[in-house]
Image 1 (cartoon, rainbow, N blue to C red):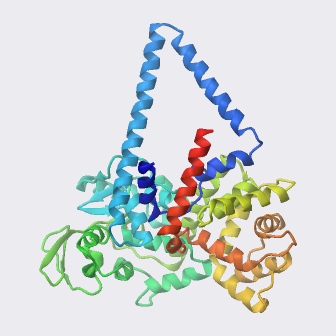
Image 2: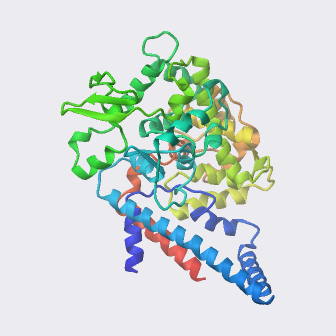
Image 3: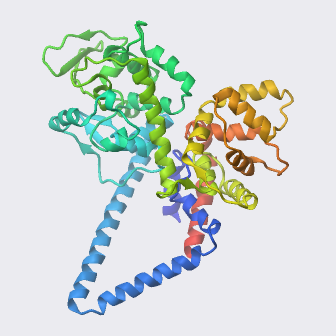
Length: 477
């Protein structure tokens, strides 16, 4: 029991109640299937036992094969166990420092280091926005100069960008912490906000963004990052591995001419600090190998739209398993996976949906994408609702559809709207309490970061205890 409490204590400070097709949501979904979850598990177990028995009954060669199989599985389990132990130790260390939710998440998923700086790979970034936990690893990979140089050959030019850019690059690239913040902001931008974002980068107003302008805005993101000098030494040490001296000093500290090619010096008031000039994946993609390219608005728009689509495709295909549609239940799971709902509250939404959806048509990717684009316009929808219903009354399906059309220009399909109301219409009167709907959807939109304050301290500890006890009871049964 002491060990379980220790594990729960480690979790309590960093828990973000994201739902995925594995883990908590997967265990819940057993009883929402056709009712054969338990018998299927028994069949699978007996099938495996018979298969191993057949192998063992085949003689000495088969016994050797069985031993090799067991050894292989044991090795996999050992790797996963070591990875989990290391991750728990890292989480425990992070508990003693003052970090934001985004800082913690970047550290958790960043799988590579270069010049004592932490970086995400493109695959790490995708995992960080759709998964609760990073992939098992024994330790971070230390990159060499040669490896970083090779990334220049792997990164496509901006004109060759696509909705598979990050998936194609996988681990052949690096993303800094400040670029991670930039990419996260893109995911929640409505298309009407793409122009504003571009104009922020275009500091001289010539309708083109060059590398220097890009780095200025990126370094401003680092400036929004807490003042490294005003934190305790342990926190300072960790933060210094997130934001390079380049990012910390570019806006407010004078840059010194490079005395050597490939090195950069920043005057930090305490002497010159040497840093390698690292061409990250985004810089290579935007500005080319030489860093002399420029971005116009059409390029910028296309990149932002491609990134949003890529992440949505990843989430959709996780549930569709190669099919053209996902079930209404899976759609609800995707919407609720980043929300901070207690287990019983989460189950209520899913049970309500199952009771009301009699004719399962499925949700297409087109409908799913349109709804997610609507969520990116949630602030406009909130304003429209306040103007329309001064008494904060519930709204009908027709009113909901009209408000979405006005705010986004999208016509949501009637079946999608029926599904949304089946999930969020608490009393089944055909009206939606949009205040509760907006509060939950804001968690979804910001992927749990907005509600992180609720996921710390005693409430999070109690949540962990309830979840752990339910899991232990299910395992015992």
